[in-house]
Length: 183
Length: 183
Image (cartoon, rainbow over the protein chains, first blue to last red):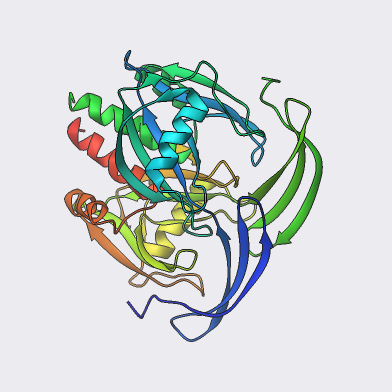
């Protein structure tokens, strides 16, 4: 695949933050010319399609500063350094929703924005949920509402434009497919 | 939703690049405490679920510097300043694949990484494709291969981990759902 590959000529770290880092790289294109790439480094994340015993989908409503909007999303969180994704998934489920489980299945992993970021989201299905804590134990800068929605309610939220992030849209579509297949 | 909202105390532009900008913001949390947010600003993008008359799905194989990998994705591209998404969609389809169409339907729009970026992807379904040009007319720093895959071949690529970005995974799942429903 040499006709597609780029080589790094120079890599400059512009910013190292709490969550992301930013690099500006000079690259040699397949035709020998030079260009620049702006790259966000992210530790990766997990997200959960989690059902209660009443077959309700757990969702979290939270404010997102990047778009200055309140979004409804499936539970998710960043990987801590060196943490295995399934450990993060179990931890985030309990922290964000107060539910715990030993029944976690990896569904798919995908890059969210391959054009400018290396963030990889690992998506899990969580079943056999147990109420672990009365109150969710959140990060100190994290504020959210936990929602328990039927599939119809979740689809309706997409219709109104109230859900609109990629992992959540994928999760809702996955459940539709499962429901149509009668699984 | 005041119990979720954050207020901007201070906003600092760290970087303004060709594609993205980076802000570091100090925010007042709902409990009155302070925190910081790292925010990537992106112009937004379109992506296309595009079928040929032979019912093949158009995909592009390209190198992505952020993860130093070659990915197979559905055709996509950034919005130019002030450009309407359906105009971008028509333009990117022709530039990347050499096909054109007047039959574009908006399917869904979703944020790709709401935790740190405002990128919004507008996903379109493109049908009644016509071969417009022999050679795709790409940006000067863009190199890609055009693939035409059956749904089964696209699903198989996900199985091998060769496709793994959110918009493409969503597109393949959408086609599965459509196929199961017999549409």
